[in-house]
Each structure stands twice: as C-alpha cells, then as structure tokens.
Figure 1 (cartoon, rainbow, N blue to C red):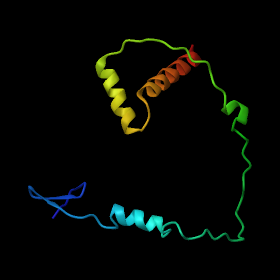
Figure 2 (cartoon, rainbow, N blue to C red; figure 1 turned 180 degrees about the vertical axis):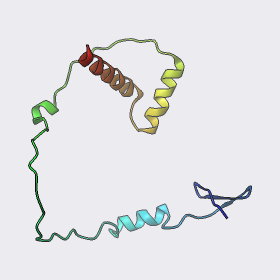
Figure 3 (cartoon, one colour; figure 1 turned 90 degrees about the vertical axis):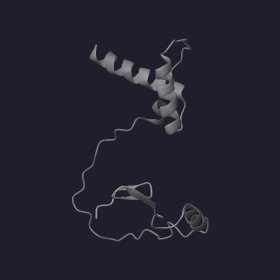
Length: 117
C-alpha cells in the first residue's frame, strides 16, 4: 500500500489518519538540549597524512571593506498593493523587514545593470 506523508497525516485510499511522528517531541528535545544531552561527543583528531594540498588565493576582503556603509537616500515611492503584500508575506517567512527586501532587490538590480552598461 502506498503512503503519502504530509505533516504527520497518512492517506490510505481516501481516508486520513493522524499518526505521531517518530522521535522525540519538541518538549522532549528542548528538555534534552537544556540538560546537554545533544552535541555531547567531542571531535577526535588523528595524525594521518592529508594527501595533496592546494594553497588558494586569499579572496576575502579586508575588515575595513566589510564595514563599508554607503549613504542612503530616503525616497517616497508608490507601489501596487499586491506587490507590498507579497514582500510583507515573504519578509515574515524569512524574519526580516519588507523594506529591507525591496531595498536589496533594487540594489541587486542596479549593481547588475551598472556592470553590463
């Protein structure tokens, strides 16, 4: 018999049954984590040959470039209600602000088109 699992439900030829998923419940997991019963094992390092190594060029920017902050300019813009609702819904899913998402989208767009121009 084929089973389709969807958030804890099993569907058998048209009828649905709720079954408890395997493993600890959320409360059991949190209690074990609080007592330090997860991620307890230590990493064991060995003194073995690592094979042929390759040195790569340092591609990371220096710290002063990481903290670079550009000047922002406040603007007022009229957007479609559906567009704003979309960004608000997506922002909530990703735990960020919708204004930040719109700002990032515009920044990516301008960066891409400045390079091709």
